[in-house]
Length: 160
Image 1 (spheres, rainbow, N blue to C red):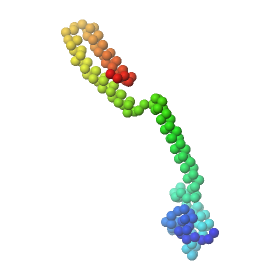
Image 2: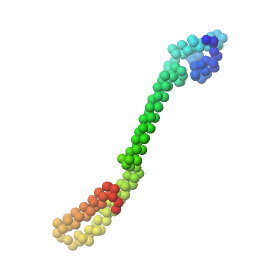
Image 3: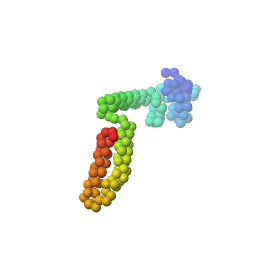
């Protein structure tokens, strides 16, 4: 093979001219007296004197690039399958929107709060003047049960 200029060798190698100049500067490859590069000798020197884990992707790393590309393709296909399954589950009713759930829980909590906050005013009139503890406990129990029924109903998705 004929000798090449620095630019031609960079094209042959698939690297920049600056990379070839650095390789010459750090004596990883040799240049003949006429300033040209014998590509066969330089390729061997490059491979022997270069740490390939730091080298840019060239024809030397083609297999690795191909396997990375294949791995990325597999990951993409897996994600597409997962997305299709999620879409199917959502359309079939197995999944519900997070926004809908948050809104339902908020509304249930608001209804329970309103019921709870209204309880003292409602039972005060019923308890006033009562002296029988059992009767007072029954009134309180009914109100607590009513509160818990509202909370349970709301959490099951029933509207008030």
